[in-house]
Structure formats: C-alpha cells, structure tokens
Amino acid sequence: GTGGMGNGDMVQITAAFKDTSRMNKLMNGNDKPCEDLLWHAGLKLLQAQLDPEEKSGSKTKSHFSLEPIPPHELLRTVMDSYLYNDVDVKLGELAAIEVVDVLPSEKMYRLPSSIAIFFLRSLLISRSIECAKESIRLPDSPESSSTTVRWRRLKSMVDDSCSLFQRMLFGYAEKAIGNYEHERHPMSLQLYPLEPVQIILVATWLYTNHIFPSCHDLLHDILQNNINGNDGRESSHGMKILETCYESFRMMTTLLALDVAVVDQDHTNPSRCVQLIMKRIESQSTSDFFGRVTSARKQIPLEDNSHNAMEDDAEDAIFYPWNDIGRPGFDGRGLSLEEDLLLYPSIRKNHEKSDKASSETFYDEMGIAILAYWKLWAQVQTQTASSSLGLDPLPSPYCKSYCWTLLFPHITTLLCATRASSTLAKMDELDLLSSMTDEHLIGINFVVISLGFDMLHTLITQTPAIRPTSCCKKTQNSIFWWAHSSQSLGLTISVLLSHVVRISTLEASRGNQSSSEVYPALKYTSLEVMKMTRTLFGFYYATIQIDALTRVCQHIKTNH
Image 1 (cartoon, one colour):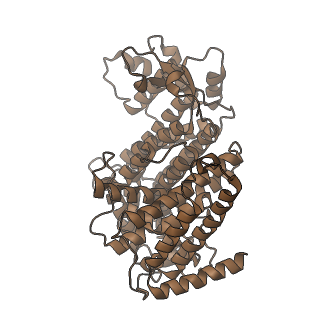
Image 2 (tube, helix red, strand yellow):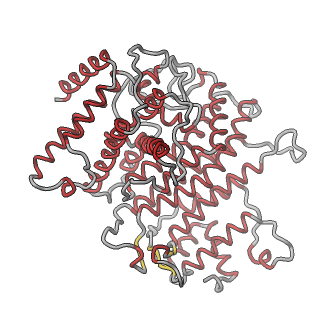
Image 3 (cartoon, helix red, strand yellow):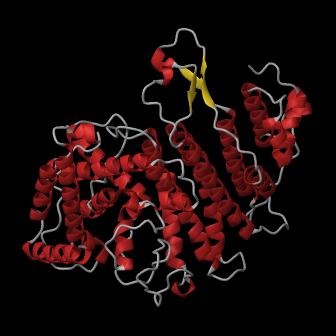
C-alpha cells in the first residue's frame, strides 16, 4: 500500500511537521493521503531524521534527506504540532487487514491516523532526546569543541518531553473512555472502534521502550555534570534535576493507574501494560540509573531543598520523594526503584502524619498498589508453579516481615479505590473525565476494591510466612514500623468494616438476586470480609490489637 507515495507527499508531510497550520490542512483536506500513505510519509520523515547521512548514491537521499534538525528545535516542532493544533482529530477505527491463511484469533487490524501520529510524535520526542545526548562532548574528549553545553536547556528538554507525553496520553485516553464493545468481538468486524486498552498499551510500549530510556541516558550526564560542579550553577539546581528524574518514574505509576481505571479486563493475569512496566522497573539499566539518582540525592545539601525543608513540617505538605535527606527516620528508603515505589505510601503517610488515602500525592498510589498486587501474585506463582509471564517475585533476601512492610499497606490503598489515584484526580481537574459515566466510575471502584480483597485473601491463605513482626516495640526505622503498627492496622480495619456495612446493605437490597447480578466484581460476601478482618486482627501482638481497636472506635465516633 505504499507504491503510490511520491516526493510531493513527502514534502507535504515534512512541511506539516514544521508548520502547524499546514498540518491542519493536511489532516482535514479533501485530498489528504490515505492512512497507508500517511504512515509511509511519516516514517520516511522519521527515517530521514534518524539517518540523515545516507549514501551519496542513494536515490532516497535526493528525495527525502533533510538537513539535521537541532534537537531542541525538533522537540519544539513536535510540541507545537500538538499543542497548537486546534483541530479536534477523531480517534478513528481499527480497519481489518485481509490476510490469507490466518486464524481468526490472529486477525490483524490497521491503526488509524490518529494513533499513527501518536507513534510518530513519541518516536521523534525520543529521538530529540537521543540527539541531545549525542551532542554532549566531555571536556577530555577528542571531539570536544569550544561550544558550551547548555545543561539547563537539556534538562528542560526532558521536562518538556515528559509533559508533552502526558498531555498526549490524557488526551487520547479521554477520547477512548466509554468505547467498550462488550457484545461484539473485533474479529467479527471489519471496522472496530478504538478501545482504551489499545491507547494504554501503545502509550506504555512507547514510554517504556523509547522515551523512558532516552530520558535516563541524558539525565545521567546532566546529574554527573551537576555533581562535578561543571555547570557553574548553584547546588540548588541539583534538586530540580532530581525532580525531573522522579517525574520520569512517576509516569509509570500513572500508566498503571490508567490501565486499571479505563481498561476493561478480568485481572486473572497481569495485563501487557503491567508486564511492560514491571520489566522496565526491574531492568538492570533502570536499577543502575536509580542508584545514580540515589547517590546524587545524598550529595545535595539539605538547605537547598525547595519543597519541604526540615523547618516546613506542615501536615498538609505533599511529600516529594527526592526531598527527604536529613529527616529523622528516613534511612529506610528502597535500594531499587521497585522497592522505593512500594515503600512510598508508608513514607508519605509517615511524613504527613496522616493515615488517610489521598489523591494529592506525587506518585499515583493506586498505580503503585497495582504493582504490589502483581508482585504478590508472582510470589504465589513461584510457590505453586513457575510463571509463564516472566514476572519476578520479591527478592529472596527480603525477610518475611519486610515483605509485609512492602505489601500490606497497599491493601488499604486498593480498598480506597479511586480516592487514592492522583492521575484520575488530575484528569478530573482538567475536565478530561466528562465522558465517564457514574456507572462506569462505580464499576471501576468495585473492581479495584475487589482487588484489595483478593490481595488480603492471598496474604491470609497462600503466604503464611509473610506476617507482621511479633515485636510490639517501635523500631528506629519509622518506615518499617508504620506497616506493623496499630495505626496501620486500625486504618485497615476501619476501611474493612465500612465495606462490611456497604456490602451488607447491598445484600439486603438485592433480595433473591445473586451478587453477580448486582455487580460482577463484587466477589466477597459481608461474612467473608468480616472473617478476613478477624483473621488479620489475629496476626498482631495483643498490645497492638488493643491500641488498634481504640483507634477504630475513635474513627467511628468521629465520622458518625
């Protein structure tokens, strides 16, 4: 389907990426190329940008090669093509590709132009960051020149890349919300509307395989330059660099939250989105970069902290994960990104002196809870049979009480459902959830709450070695202590009892209807939840039980 592409089409696409108004005309003109040609032209532009130095004898060079675009100009061009495009481009539909001798389950569909442009923009974002990385010349390099490296611009490029990707992700997710074809399977159709699963999967693949790695390669050099003092700027600039590093981590919790919030799935196995993110988080390259970030965090003076210095201990202050050095009890940070993410809710609650779920958090805690859910799932899989999906359990050197520290607090997060999602709160603030019906939102909450019940049931019945510590004394590590404390237990018991009341009300109102007729995700009866609550309560030392009951009674008195 690419034989009809000519030089005129390539010039048109090239100009479109440089001129937003011409992009609008291209996308809305009567003579616009068909989707195959648009794909081909865009890929040709990308090829020319990736490999501008083609062989002199190639015909392609005379037709398609472009002058190398400076990295910051390329990124700005991509940003302008999205931010200043006032045309409401529709998502389009998946179009069936006729292929002979293909099983129905392997039927292929062609992505529409809107997603093609999402691909191209994301790949060009990644390439601009890679080119910026390649433009850096170390002082002792034979290729070094007298040109000064503009480190602040390089950091801003990473900021702009993550911000633009998030805006594109939110915009496409908003358009896809509500596009669910429960009655018809795509294999029976020639045209099939895009569903959220395709949007989230495409975005996750692009981020974990392209934007995330390229940003980290550039940030590594930016961090190193700041630590060496070569940028000639005050040390407080290092805190802003660290903030950019953690912003790149945050996007993965956002993707995990959207995967559970807008994608219709049964959660019997981890989704492809979960697999891609866990693979990236657990990769050696990510571990090495996180180690570099942790090392840099320890070298930045406390007095330069811009968000929550020690003198600013207001309970309503948001905890930022790059800004905790020097605080008493904050020596328990994770050694890996995965471990640090799992500890974040406990660290945040300890800092804010609050035990409540919150949507005003840096990371999306609902997304982190989904990560914890599947880590526990992988833990069980290794006990029963090897997982064919390649998810690793928690490292074996972790003692079982520390596994409880990493996993248990996320049960409460799941039981609070969307109230613990900073992503959905942000989208709602931007009025991007207007197409989400109340029924859909209630359904999401039922699904996430049921995952919390599943996680608690798994901890109780299938992982007998993972239990809270039997010691009732507070340890020096306040982060470890919080997950084993009466405060944490009292919070979880209060949330469980509130669900017992709600489920009992549903059971009383439905009469002879089965629970699946009320809502399929409601898998546990009020008696089953009450039994799990009593069992959980029995895991703790007697003194902690008494203190937790006092907290529960106080909570009930305050809220009723």
